[in-house]
Length: 243
Ligand code: MN
Image 1 (cartoon, helix red, strand yellow):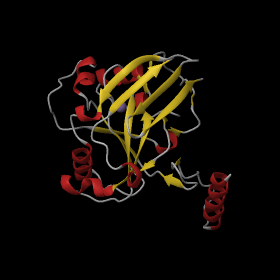
Image 2 (cartoon, protein in one colour):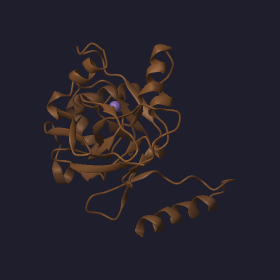
Image 3 (tube, helix red, strand yellow):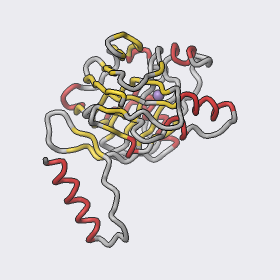
Image 4 (tube, helix red, strand yellow):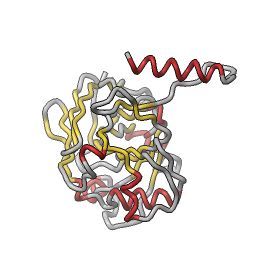
């Protein structure tokens, strides 16, 4: 497979560059209509970006400044399987639109923000809700709840050159054929350009960064054997089995 050839070429080149151990593979996502990959640098996530989800989590739906956390890029999985994680008995699905940046920058103005987007994807911000809840209560970081292995099942990137920049469209998730999550991109508290602009004031963004833009209401637990199927209208769909 091209993917494997690409990976091994990269790894060979790096070994020759003099690393003392085998360098880790470059996390990457497939690209619709291409045999080339989208390399991932960072995975930023927006918290509580749909009012109804903020309410279901017991928070104020009013427009407070957005807040962010990160997942590790190597937590991306693209094989349609989500291994149920250790140390949790309350693992939740969060279907989200993902923005893939082709250009970086800092202090990006809202009206220029979409020029930095290379494409879009559909992904899941899988969450160990019990561990996240404990962390919240104790004022601790969210990593254990959010950034565990395989916590970001993801579909391929669709180039914006193909689909444009979606600002509305259904965001949905079914578990075993039953609708669990439903929202619309037009309901985002912080729009995609606003999110990019705000984030670029906190971090210097770079090509290869992903932004998971938040999840609509209806999050809930999954168990082994469940099939999650979800999508974002105009972008794509994913199907992921909990194993
Ligand atoms: Mn999320």
